[in-house]
Amino acid sequence: MQFLCDETFAGTRLDVFLSEQADLTRSAAQKLIESGDVTVCGKQVNKNYKLRARDEVLVILPEAKELEAVPEDIPVEIVYEDDAVIVVNKAQGMVVHPAAGHDGGTLVNALLYHAKGRLSAINGVIRPGIVHRIDKDTSGILVVAKTNEAHLSLAEQIKEHSVSREYFCIAHGTFKEESFTVDKAIDRHPKDRKKMATVTSGGRRAVTHVTVVRQFSRCALLRCRLETGRTHQIRVHLQSLGHPVAGDPVYGVKNDFLTKKYALTGQLLHAALLGFIHPEKGDYVEFCAPLPEHFQKVLDDLELRG
Image (tube, rainbow, N blue to C red):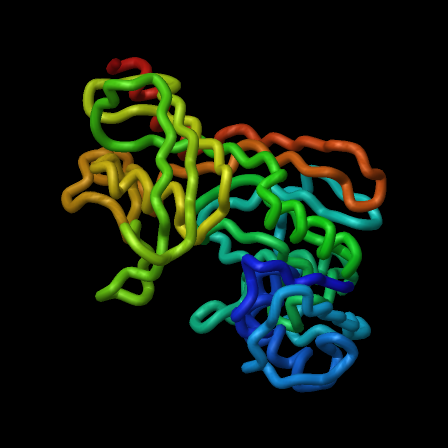
């Protein structure tokens, strides 16, 4: 794959540029650079190289390697599958890929078994096929790439904000407006590096379009459409407004009455819709997932009580 550096990225480190443009992890980009699979204007450079406007960056994709994550026979709901992609409805509580403390039982382990190892190799041996993620305790739709070509196509669409992504959540408080947009940059929390936070300077722009579907006495059902897709975006944006997502163990309220009443084990946040241009067919496809049982039970009870 080939990229042309424009004025926007002039002065950016090569590894940072690749992590943005090709949706690679920083470490994956650095490995490609170190192995000589990346050239700038026909020359090999190091990861610290700072790009100049009109630099041509060429990346040679690695051959698919034997995957290190172990296939596991774990039930997973397949919404759609073909030779290029798998669309799944992830259950709440399932981690997307292996990481510290979660070396098994993840969606990747399940899909390695299901797809017999045929997943894209771009994100390495721990995150094969993973183009985007949803949090462990968020349920719903995500797409996984089976080929490198599909991975690159989907990553480019995500970068261009052309992927349709809608979520439902139950958030605390009452809302005066029926719909509104949150446009606040997000960066690492200044004191807790495991968390994200909205910032007034720096960070990356984050935009969430919110519609109040149903207002209850102390909380509301919201539909959130992502324009961007930053880490924990919906959870952080709503928390910044004083309307944290119900059941959120990281950004939620203390003594959450909904958590106590319904014995919630995580945030009531569900990825309900995902739409994108199919990497091979070229037409727009859209997939939906109904609210999971635990979410629907809370909603039904709230509807009864008003």
